[in-house]
Image (cartoon, rainbow over all chains, first blue to last red; front, side):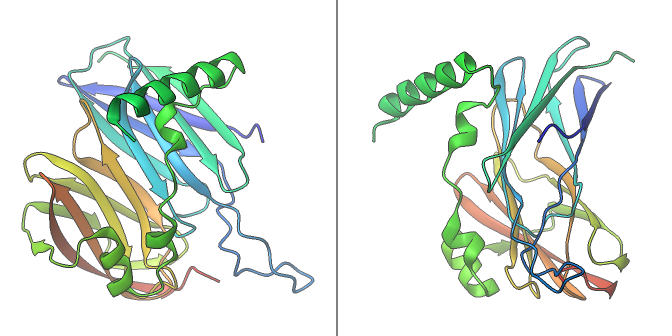
Amino acid sequence: MAEAMKIRATLQGDVADVRVLISHPMETGLRKNERSELIPLHFITHVSATHNGKTVLNAQWSQGVSRNPPLGFRVRGAKAGDKIIVSWVDNKGETSSIETVVAGK
Amino acid sequence: MSVKRRKILQAAAAAATAALGLRITPAIAAEWNKAAFGATSVADALKTLGATAASPSKDILIKALDVAENGAAVPIEVTSRIPNTQSIALVADKNPFPLLASFDFTGNAEPYVSTRVKLAGSSDVRVIVRADGRYYVAVREIKVTTGGCG
C-alpha cells in the first residue's frame, strides 16, 4: 500500500522536532461497513525511527491509535542536514517508510 | 539468545531487507507484545507490562484536552522529566483493549512523544514511564463527547 506519509523535521536548538503524518485506516475490527459486515482488524503494529542510521524510536501500537495518526518525537544532538527515516509495518505485513533531512532554522 | 547473537541476526535481517530494497530497520521485527495489547483490563495490561507497582510521578507531563469532542482522534502529548527514561506507554482505562501504544527510546531520542488515540468514552488515561528499569505513572482524565471505538 503506497499511501502518502508526510514528514517534517525542524531544529530547535540542537533538538530535531520530527512530525510525521501516517495514512492508515487503523481499523479496530469492531466497525461495520454499510452492509453491516465487520471490517477486519487492520492496524499498524510497529513504528520505528532512525537518526543518521541509528535507531532512536521503536514503538508498538494497538488498534487504539487513531486513523491517519500523527506521530511526533524529538532527537537531541541533531543538526541541519541530518537524515531521519520513519518506517511502519501493520498486522497484514504492509509497510511503508519515509525519510527527510532536518531543516535548518 | 545472547545479545551478540541477536545483533548478528538483526544485522543479517537488515542486510536481507536492504537487499529487497526495503528500509525496515532490524528492530521493527521485534515481536509485537500480544499479551499486553490483548489484555482487556487495565490490571491485566499493567501486569503484562510488569508495571503494577508503578510509582506516581509529577515528572510525567501530559498535554491533552480536558474534553475531546471526537473519541476517534484524541491528541495526546507526553514528556518525561524522569532521568534515563527508556519507554512511555499509553493506557486508556475504559477501552476494550486498554494498552494503546508503547514507545521505546534509544540513543539520542528525547523522552517525548505525541500522537492521537481512540477513547471509547470518558476515561482516565494512564501514562506509564519506565526509567532505569523502574515504573512510574501519571493519570489524566479526558472527557469524550462521542466515543471512538465503534
